[in-house]
Length: 346
Image 1 (spheres, rainbow, N blue to C red):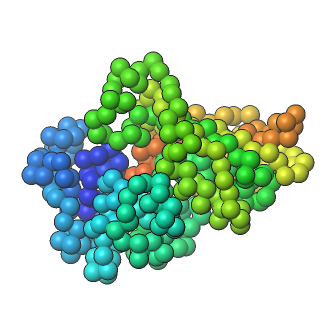
Image 2 (cartoon, rainbow, N blue to C red; image 1 turned 180 degrees about the vertical axis):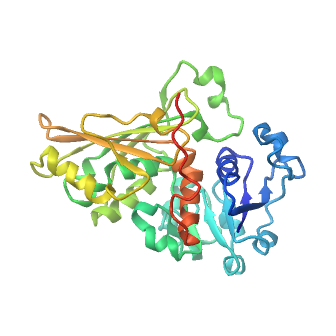
Image 3 (cartoon, rainbow, N blue to C red; image 1 turned 60 degrees about the horizontal axis):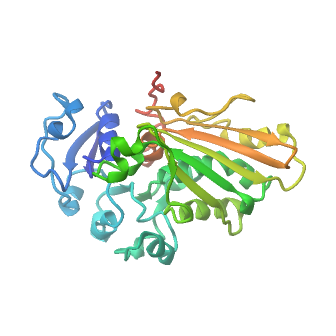
């Protein structure tokens, strides 16, 4: 039995962690943390948990929590996990952080993009970037996981094979991403109101979105050299899902077959990354509620570019599902344990 604590359990990602973990017989959630609802019945915050969760919301006392559980998930705003974690805690419990606190290696870059002073930079070098498809072996032995962002997860998985194989020039990459409104979190914001979002689509964070340096850093590791990309997210009127369409110039004259062979090389044995059949484009509805990432590409010989496409559920593979995927690896379990939910349709 794996004992789990969740700090930030009343946000969308935290609620998704609860939903997925409650379905497992080998996991016990011991701590439903929430600064906003301390002492309040968890099922009164999320009524879908009525008669499923009887506990009240707790605070974010990670020191106390570390002595009660095997793993702590922090589904919190940037800065909180870094302010709570210390050597004493990490000596007792594994921590999977769903914020950006430990994703970026350069603390100066983190502080520049997130406008925060990092509270525990001494742990940045130790933290493992929790993208199992790339860092699987490192995840297994980690005590601190930096769970990737939703946009970086979808963007990276969409283009990784062609960057890794040198088939595209990564510095020509343009990444156009669309996200459902749950990506903005559960907090009350004017831009997330129904009347602002419904029947509307807009770009936001143009040129300054905080996931940009995370995408660039991970692609730089794949390319073996510094990578700069153009990344533009868009908000679309749906609850869940991310769709990425990326464009890049070929470095040579690769054929459709060579490009597909690159994707198959890296994803043929991956359970959660599905390379679609030729001509089939990813759609968010085909991954909704699941931990799958659907990817495909289209060669455009007229422009000597390739169009790469990917889709994930931002709440699952983009957050809670991937965090649980990492937990499974950390505890020596099959990676898909508790994550074999079939995508919902319609």
